[in-house]
Image (cartoon, rainbow, N blue to C red; front, top):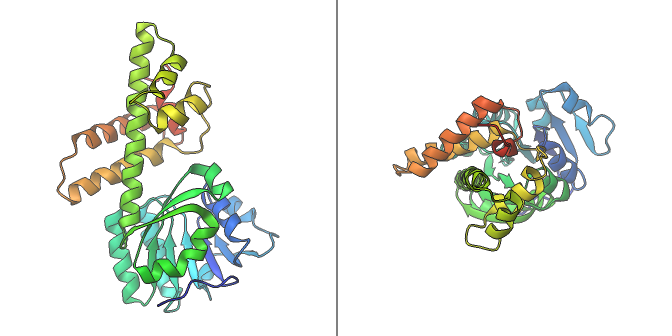
Length: 292
């Protein structure tokens, strides 16, 4: 059985955006890091940081690495980076994809990695930027028992709660389905609040009632009180990413020959929101008064 990565093992990290940077910051307290991002400003942040070496490319980040962690925007980018890593990593190394990727693509990449003698774990997370900074993320982990055991110290530095949910791709499947539920919760809560408001009921009062009743969900408990009712559109998660995750879940339904009309309606609503708001708007703006 593969032993867990030892403290001090060299680790690469590719993708230093809103989630990647705080996750890499936590990893740097336990492992020497070689980091890379295509954005020069994101990379420049790490110059002079103890225990972290900013490097000029994906392959350089992989040199001598026991593992490489990915935090990237979509499956197309993940696939390109993984194929480059497989040219540079030594057999026995591991790739940990913490992006929100397509689980079908993840399975294919896991097979390619295995053929190259490289372990592959998908470990997408939930909890947002605040959770990444605090180390309290929830990780949904897919991979063989052997590979998941090996990367446990990495995940422990980043995620307070970890669920091994199945083989390669299972983590990304559960993450997409989780975000589909979140997307649906925001969408239906927005509609409920709009209907009630037009009837003359105060939004804050409705949220209070919902949270004491059977309609309670993450949108009513957190997203609306924290952001929407306060007209703060700064949760740190973009509309384009919420739409992408809903579409991944819908693609998974098709791949598994599952009828999913509510998922289809949810994905369509988020595509419409992205068209109206633009891809870089905060996803809480779905509920902005007057948007529709």
